[in-house]
Image (cartoon, rainbow, N blue to C red; front, side, top):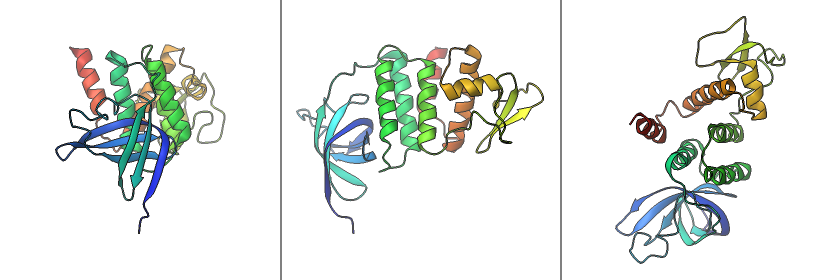
Length: 238
C-alpha cells in the first residue's frame, strides 16, 4: 500500500499541462530531486486562481505536493523569477526539450544533473537558441538515461582518429570505414571527438552531430514523430 507523503520546497519546471474536470489541471513537472511527477492542480483553471499565472512552462518554480499514487496533489507553487519569457525560435526549441523529457524521462526518476543542464539551457535560450545548445542537451539527456553514445573509441577499442571515417552502430558505437559513406549514421572522426568535447565551432561537426543525435533519439523514442520539430519545420517553410 502506498503511503501518503509530502514534498516541500522543490525546484521544478512545468513540462506539460492538460485540463482535468471543469476547473483543474493535471500538470507534468520536472523536479530536481524527484524527477518527472504528475500533479493535480485543483481549481487552477478558475479565473481568479492564483495558480493561473504561476504554472507556466519554462519558468523556475518552487513546488510543494502531497499524496500517494501516480498523480499527487499540488499544495503550493511559487514563481522564482530570473528567467525571461521565451519567444520565436527559442520558444519552439524549449518545447522540443520538454517533448524529449516527456517521451524519454521515466516518472519518479531523479536526475539532478540533467535538471541543472535543462535550467542552464533555458537561460541561454533567452539570448537566442543555438543548434549547439540543443546538441549539448540531447547528449546530456541520453547520457543520464544510460544511452550516451560512445564517441572516443570505436567498437574494436581503438581510439577514434579525427581524419578517419566511421559509421555509428546504435548501442555499439563507431565502426571505422575505409572511406566516406553516404549514410545518416556516417560521420568523421573529428565530429565524434568534437561531440565528446561539445565543441561545435566546425559547421561539419555540427551538421553531422545533429544527424547522429536525431537518429539516436528516433531510435530511443521508438520512431515517434515529435510535434515540436514538425511545427518548427512547417513555420520555416512558410
